[in-house]
Amino acid sequence: MNIQQTSTNTVVGLKNPQHSPKRMLFLDLVLSVFRLNGLLIAEGDSMTQSLGLTSARWKVIGVVALSNAGLTVPGIARVLGQSRQAVQRIVDVMVEDGLLNYQPNPKHKRSMLVLLSETGVSAYNELREVQDPWAIRNTEDIPVQELDSALRLVRRLIQRLDR
Image (tube, rainbow, N blue to C red; front, side, top):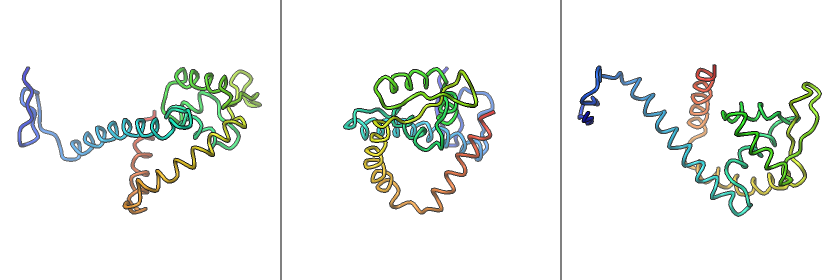
């Protein structure tokens, strides 16, 4: 089938090609979020490389550091929107590397809490020295109200899709 975009946002060869403007905006948003995710992963890898980390480790360290009393692997997975198995693999390697520790969980015998080790706290502090200027540099021309509005929209969509 030959699919071509026409000037009126219709796709030749597909049934019911007409889309409402709201639906098109949503689909454009989804594609933009996919692209943003890829760019953030690449930026994270570049930013953390000199620290011997990856964007995956950056995300885990950040989530654990911002938790009040540690998180379980399933808890980290929920926050990151990733599978428990994927997070388990990363956490296990980070424990082996001395960045994280497992601690008994008083609320659940089998699901240990994950906490930053002393090395992990140092790594988090080093990450902050790189991350904070990066965040400022990438948002300096964006009004706080726009960032707040975008964050509320993304959280609303996460809540709607996370059923």
